[in-house]
Length: 372
Image (cartoon, rainbow, N blue to C red; front, top):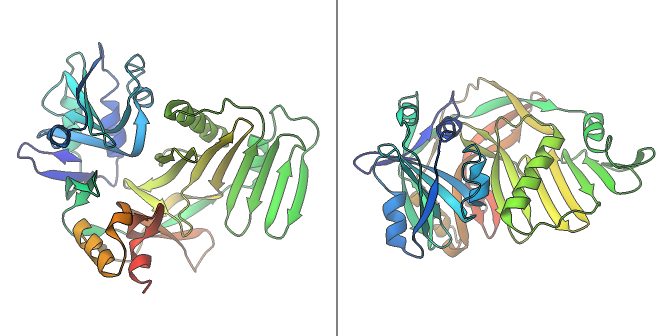
């Protein structure tokens, strides 16, 4: 989200270029970094920095650690205190500091860096970007980005990539510590491969989801940094193209990390709310990896016209009018719903919609509104 010199805020949407990746590239040359806590538990100070004129803000759906952020700064932050962070504010007119924010306790940290050029950061704003009017406001006691106007969204058709079961068996069960042959069991819509020891891989032909269970000893990580590091390593093991797959959420209670495929910066949701990949640490002797067997690969022009989504306040007001409790709404995000295309099993339709985190699960706004 960009805040201009007058304080006007817009979400940056670029169909051709990943704006977030372009912004992250400008963070590689930070040097001589020092962190200073400016405030905690002060909403006024938090919003003063979050809504700072002449800045770009990057946001996470759930907190990550400073060590995780260090991965996009060429490890320059690795020696800083490992605070949890929800948002990064990058001034476009001040080249010797950035700000890190935590939505949970309204903490504000200033990271001073060696003076560097802001040219590349400002160049992002001059790309062919669509701007959606927005504002960071409080909702149920927590900061949330409100879309301030009706949003026209382009539906898509996508050709999906379907890897064979053998591909994942080879990647996940072979070349490990396993001994002996791979055992195969079939029951209804489930096929289970195992090394008869500590590794098991199950495919569900109905949901098109694979589940890999690893019962070897692990470090039973508890804090966010090692959990996210381990989760990323599991993604690499899976071998899926990760260009458009992004971290989406970390549930600290279940230690489940979720990733979704993004289109134009908006996440894809399937009918069961599953994303693209999730990882979970169950205990010191078990962890689980779930992944979709079908993934969007090639966009195909859609003949459908744009879909107009209501602004955030209108969406919330209509949900409340339908009987949903505002206090049970945790978040709202614009996204794409995954629908099968009737003309081909290899085609999907991506339908724009609001997605509502209601009572802890993501559900489409349309399904909630049309329920009664």
